Image (tube, rainbow, N blue to C red; front, side, top):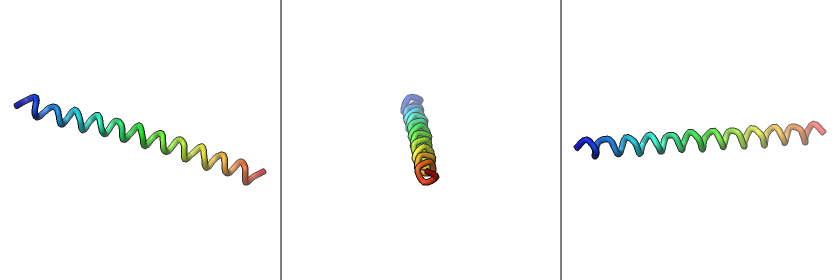
Length: 43
């Protein structure tokens, strides 16, 4: 019983960690792209 209850919790925490990492990567790429476009537009 305990294992059946704990496994979904571990999976949800693992998935949430992957979503957070994916979100940070997307934000970093978007920020660099916007910054790069701003540098091109300034020139």
